[in-house]
Image (cartoon, rainbow, N blue to C red):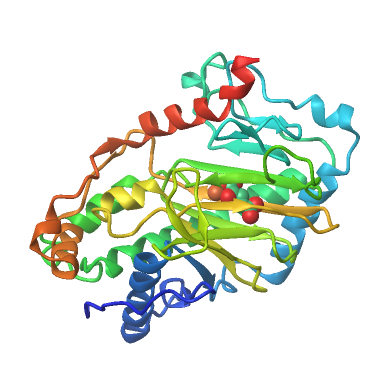
Length: 359
Ligand SMILES: O=C(O)CCC(=O)C(=O)O
Ligand SMILES: [Fe+2]
């Protein structure tokens, strides 16, 4: 793995072709090439366009997923409200505009959220993240189309995991001896039966007097977010930190918000805070937000491919080594701390409802 001193990020996100990790006959050179580009993209942006997905997701699959989500948002409010997220469960179901909260401001979107189902014996609907998913009856194809989507996103997520291991310089192709430190085995165990979250989000145009934005600035919590959005430009924005940048965040960090406009056939993928932990802080979870001001009703489907709730995520030795090589010997001590993913997630999800709890 060459250790690049990367050029300054440009104003558009890089494209990463994942097909060498999805092919039944992988080409080693092509895999190395993808891993190298992924490494740079994760270092510089924490965000990229993921292409080369057609062996898993066809253009029809992409269209159908957005069509059923849009059709659901078009059903009468009374029907949607029957699926409203229940107190206690706190997570699964429908939220009206303003019920999702980011940094204590109401987001200007409606949404329907599903989480990986728990085995019925473990389900306790009074607890956060428990309780069954609330599938809408209309449109009838909503559930079969999106359950297929969940399966497909697992295939993409596992391929991304392997590419990320290679990007960090971990031997994923060798036998158990090649993976001497057991790092690839450990990474695979984190996603052997991965937790997941799928959101369908509907964004009406943001009114000029709204107190928040369509989706407030945040980082994603977990592993990878695979975002499939309709063709609306000028909505999703990604924050690139730079001391001389024209914009600043709520914490005063300077940088530039760039548009992550949709690219046909590609997902926008970003790394979450768990990648930041296991990459020893090299691959940063990046702030992003949605400011959708145009006249259309925008629909997006982010899929969060996560570690299992029990996984202890900690900096990988290869990542610590790589960090030292790239940033110098003093950088080995990073501030990232090991964390059990489920504990981290529960604390974050309860914060999303902070405003509602206070009312
Ligand atoms: O709708 C989008 O483009 C992004 C949504 C998002 O960032 C999220 O749900 O975490
Ligand atoms: Fe996000």
